[in-house]
Structures are given as structure tokens and as C-alpha cells.
Image 1 (tube, rainbow, N blue to C red):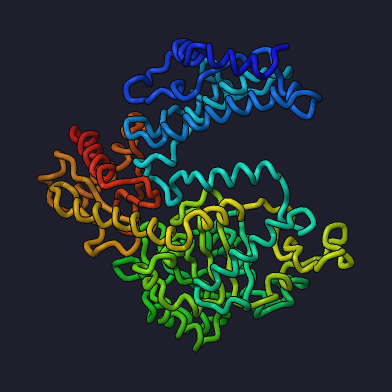
Image 2 (cartoon, protein in one colour):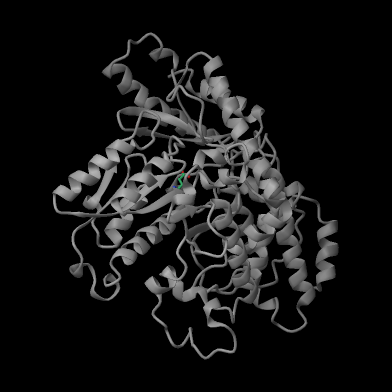
Length: 546
Ligand code: ABU
């Protein structure tokens, strides 16, 4: 068997791209127009006689292991650099049946006998190839975008450490990092640093669920042992533009999605405070017991901010728990220019804030913050004795696992902590200001260009910009149901062509009475105004024959 240095020599002397070009011919891939070749960065060597069992911990396999990882790192770095090249595709779209059937050299099916490392490297490459480059500056499809390299380094370290957040004994450094970061986030929200608590969760929906769970426990601690039978019929309130996770959580928690009152919003998507108060009064009159209000700070589609102070006044009057879902808007707290949009958040009892969205931390990284110390623990703890022994050789309050509804918990903190070290709070602020600048640029371009219509006429509050494109056949149609019917079909048709072509990606949706429109969001600091121009030009190009 060859030694690692022989692989490396082989890898240096092998003609770059040999194996991959061959694969490409065999694949019959049509993807040759724009793609900057991965193989330039990824110079293959031959791992076809080597298997996973030949790596560490098999003895004397340090060099082989290093050689394999070197190959993998080259491949990943090739992907990273390709993700930043504007002439490379954002995606190489295949339908599910095509991927399931398998493409030459790439099969999702699992073998009985081990595949060699050469095949595994090709599998790694192809997994990235047929995926979506969410770090590409022209990917506008999701709230979480970008490819932060310090974050990526952090994620690699996290996987290398392969530990669990539930106890200090297995995650001493990560548990303390989480404490430091959560304390800092609470301070930024405007709470006292010492008071309160928090936890990193698997996504914003779960963070919102924690808000409802704690609110219910705060008012009705007996729910933990007696269940919903012991409680009156509860009601909770959130805006009609808020995230669907509130209804989902109500279903999961046995409150019932019908007991979530969706409060009316104004035409910018902000909850109307007087409507909230009317809903609370109406629900009480029906014999239900209101207990929880969510204020959205950065709604998913419009990026709207509810008026938190006005909602907090109402909650105070009716003695209700105020949660702020700042999953998307929380990042703006890092910007001196934009943090005023969350005024009043300091009056919330709990907050959801997802650093994996506007702050660009690699997925996933979602926090739940609460301003009451001890409540998370009281609500969730069950003292599993095999894990949370009270007679440990350290302060067991650092065993954060019993505060959660999970047992095992992924380490989401390290990449975030490392990015904060690398950027400082100021760096996050500048990054966010840049994304907001791109949104303003798009807003201005949409006003300037003909054949685009803004969904909201006012300047965007967050980085969401929503708009319609009017293709030639619709331009002369008078407003009315026929025009609406045809306009509804435009965004899906353009998006379908866009995905086939693969050079950019944007989302669309209907909302209330509004037919399908595009939603562009900016959270990737690599995006420049030229990418915004590209997106609009591409929509015009793909829509010109509609
Ligand atoms: N609420 C989860 C993120 C949704 C989005 O990226 O559009």
C-alpha cells in the first residue's frame, strides 16, 4: 500500500482534473457554460485502493489520514472559492427522480461492501455539486445565506470535538462560551446582564416554542405534572404576518392551533395594537384565558416590525407574557443605525434571536432568551440521575441539559463565539449595515426601472424587498381579477426557469389578497449592488416571453 507522501507526490504529478473531467464526460452533464471548474482547485490523487478502515485509528495511518483530509480540504476550498465566483452557478438543478435514480458516478443507494476513499471523495464533490450554493452572492432565496469562513472553521472544530452540550463534564468550554454569549445577547436586548437565562435551540420555531412553554408554566406551573386538564382554555395572540411556528407550537403543546388569535396588521405588516386589545377583550368574553402575546421583530415575508412598546403596554394592562420573535430582526440590534427598529424589546419577557439569519452564522444557531432566572430550569428539569447527578465534583448548575426539552444538544455556540471574536460587535454591525444598504439599493432600482411594481411603497424596514415583475403580455391589462390571475403565475414560471438556468435564486409567495410576488432578502455580506442588478436583469430576461 502506498504511503501518504506517495499519494501527495502522486497528487502533485497527476494532471489536474483528470478524474473529474472523465466523470463529467461519463455524466453527460450539460453544465459547461458558466461553471468555474472545481477541478482547478481540486487536484486529485488516487485513493481507489484505500478504505475508511485504513485511516486512523488503524495504527500507523497518520499520514494516510492526513493525505485524505488534505484532498477533502482542497475540495472544500475549491467549493468555497467557486461559491464566490459570480460566473459560477448557484445551483445545478435536478429533479428528485433524477437524483434518486443516480447520476453516473454518484448514487444515493448504500452498498453492502465498503466503497473506497476515491469514491467517497467523488461523493463529497458531487454532494456539493448537486446542492445549492447558499453562500453565493446571488443566492437570495432564504433568510439564512452566506458562507462565513470563520464560522465554517468553527463548525469543523465543533464536529471534530463531537461532544454534547448537556453537561459541563463533557463540554466544559462550550458550556461556558454559551453562558458568555447568552449574557452578552441579553445585555444587547437591554436586560440586566446578571438576570435572565437562555439556551441555543434547534431553530427559531423551537425558540418560539420555548417562549410559549415558559409563559404557560409561569402562569400555571401545575401544567408540568397535571397537564392541560388542570388548566382553563388558554388563548395566545400573534399577528397575521407572524411565523407559522406559533400555531404549530400551540398544536404541539396541547393548546390547540384554534386558540391562537391572529391579530390584524396594517398595510406594512405591523400588528395593530388596538386590534390586539379588542381581540384580548373578545376572547375573555368567551371564557378563554389569554396568557401570551408575540410581537414580531422582522416578519418573514415583509420584514415588518411590530410596535413593541404599544404591545408591551397592553400586555402590562392585561398581565400577559410578552415574547418578541426577533429570529430575523434580532441581528439589527448589532447595528447602531438600525437597532431603533426594535425599540421596546427590553420590555419583552422572552426573545427569539437567530444568529444564523441576519448575522450570517452557519446553520444552525438560534437562541432563546428569557428575563427570568431559574424559570427554564424549573419548567423543564426532570433530574435524570444517570446524567445530572447532584453530587458531581463541580457546580452542577453548569449542566445545562436539564433546562431544555431535548436530551442531547448540538454545539451551536462555538462557530458563533469564534465569529464574534473575529469581527467584534462592530464587525457584525457593519456587516448588517451592508446588507441593509443592498436592500435600499434594490428598493431604489425597483422604483427607477419600468415593469416592476413594489408590494410596499415605503422604504424597507428590514432587508426584505417584495415586488412583482410585469412581463410584456400583462402590461396592457387593466387591474382586475384576470390580471391578478395571470400575475399570480408569473413568479413561479420565472423561478422555475431561474432554477433550470441556475445563475441566481429568489423566493416568491402570495400573501393575503396579494398574488404571488418575489421576496428578495439580503443577509450575505458578499452580495454587491452588481448582484442586485444581475437579479433584476435575469428576471427581465427570463420573463420576456411570458
Ligand atoms: N422562518 C424560517 C426561514 C424562512 C426563510 O428563510 O424564508
